Length: 134
Image 1 (tube, rainbow, N blue to C red):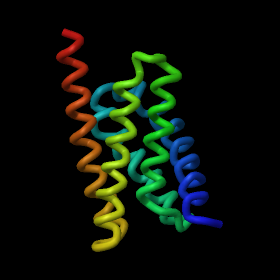
Image 2 (cartoon, rainbow, N blue to C red):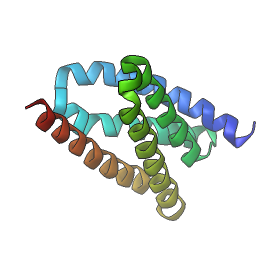
Image 3 (cartoon, rainbow, N blue to C red):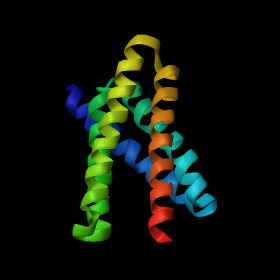
Image 4 (cartoon, helix red, strand yellow):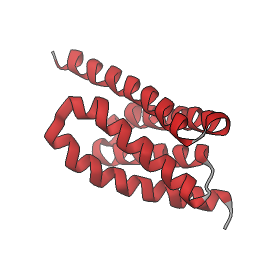
């Protein structure tokens, strides 16, 4: 199977796993879960699915971001465009970080770096949403 096909499959598997995990965790943990647990769940799902299938890490993350963007559009219509573009850009960046570090230091270092970047991003988004709500 070609790398792009494997990346699509890995992203689909990761999206499904993240959907289920986030649907369980976020209602119980709220903003803290979004800031700290969601990044762990999503980065682990994307990276391990890609590694297990032999898929391209970067493209797995990009496709995952595209799926999250489409979900934002489905949920909020045109108002979801900014969040959708942000999701695509952010997950693409997390994919670049993951692929770069994976090639130099292995899967655990790549997961740690991607988690830290994703958690920092989500913390900023949660803080922005809280300020906007007030």
